[in-house]
Each structure stands twice: as structure tokens, then as C-alpha cells.
Image 1 (cartoon, helix red, strand yellow):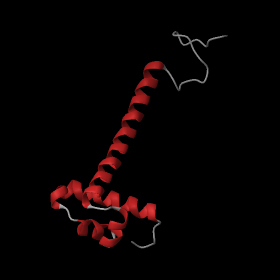
Image 2 (cartoon, helix red, strand yellow; image 1 turned 120 degrees about the vertical axis):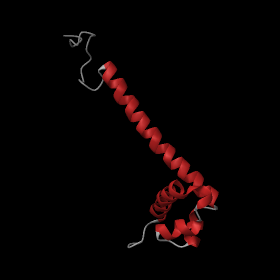
Image 3 (cartoon, one colour; image 1 turned 135 degrees about the horizontal axis):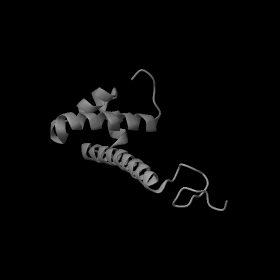
Image 4 (cartoon, helix red, strand yellow; image 1 turned 180 degrees about the vertical axis):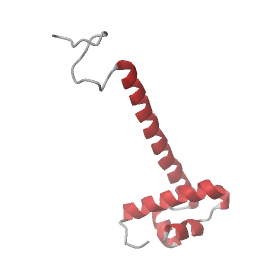
Length: 102
């Protein structure tokens, strides 16, 4: 790593790298040494953030779930807005589209 990251930034970098490594090589086929090397940290630094390979894997699952959930919520909201007309106008409208209270 070219510049020193804060603890939370380093943790996030480890998780992002670990997710890529696990996706490419599987849980069994990956090592903490490989993840540390690809992140640009040492294994002791990795273990300061995660107690075990399993804990790191669970952090990856949580990170991926958050991304999927955010995408799903965005798609759901956009779909709902298209169906209901939300977001088109700040003024409430009738079913015909005419402004209410006019």
C-alpha cells in the first residue's frame, strides 16, 4: 500500500481483497497469507482486524449482503416510484395526474 490507511480504511481494504480472493479461489483454496499479501499488509495486521479466517469470511459475506440489499432496495424503490408516480412531482396528484387542491 502506498500510503498509510486509517484502521477502518485498512479493515475495509482487507475485506474487499478477501472477497475477491474467496470468490476466485474459494474459502478452502484461500489463505490468510495470500489475502494479506494481495492487500499489501502483513498477516499480523490482518489478524489485528479479524480473529480468524472464518471471521474474515463472515465479514465478506456481510459486506456482499449489504451491497446486494442496497441494490435491491434501490431497484424496489425505483420500481415502486414508477408504479405510483412518486418522485415526479412534489405536489400530490389525483389518479388522472391533475394536481390536488387546485
